Image (cartoon, rainbow, N blue to C red):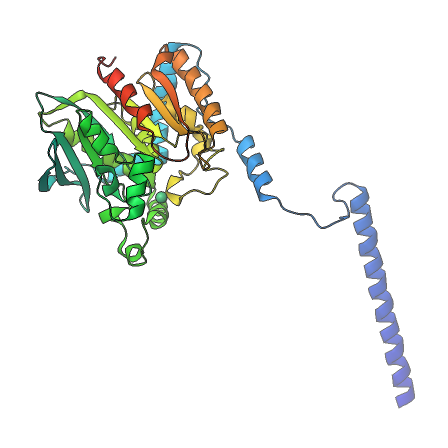
Length: 394
Ligand SMILES: [Zn+2]
């Protein structure tokens, strides 16, 4: 074959290849147009934009809540609680903790005691797990005869000592002055025995690595590691409250029929979930927490320790609070609380009031709205607790 003939053949092959590529592209374009015409997709007129907030609102709306309150009689209400409470405990990781820690007997150790004039403040540790010496303060009025009601004061995202009036900064002092956060001191001056526990992830229970970075808490590590172990930070805090009640109710100076729990923000979270899970708590007063999950932690940035996997598939926050009925419940809220918005508090309260109505005790469900923001309001707590402590529980 001459060089000229070979060159002609190569050109012919190249033209033929090009023609078949054009044919393939034509077939693909025709295919795309046919698919578009058949409705499998439409040709984009502009680039689609993802709106996360809209998406998550739709996700929340589509969820079916297994224990959404639908009871119409007291009997149905009781059956609803009996079915819901074990599922909530499971979601919190409490069932797993019970299995893992079977046979563990918590030991209490008193570290030191301080006389503060009208009351005694003691520092204690309770071994709530074989590896967890949980620090707590015990406050007791000096004038004390017989058994006294017990108040547990669970704290939020602040130093655990703030509730007993110990301050380390000007901000701490402001926090007590403007936000009435010396809640344990208020309680002992009301004449009650008080336990002010450390929330895990705070104070002496903070992870060392986080402490070195100057963090107030190690909630994020706690949440991530809890998830691996089938636990939750809220579940661990509820566990600790129950172990403290086990211990306290064996004391000769505590009245086991009158136990209240109150705390602000994260302390409100612990108060609400502890009372929902542990029926020995007779009065619950969460502050600046009671709201809807969707309207607060579901749409506004909150600390990692608030989250319970799949909680919305069980119920909304008012359903969880419904597990406290018929025991007295008062939600304290701040009119200008930006992280637990008041319109969602009202919405949640309407739903909870309905549960108390079906339970036959609407007068035991109250809402106190303070004029300020995200803080404690003692006027919402102590008159309510006093009123219901004076009655024998049903
Ligand atoms: Zn947290």
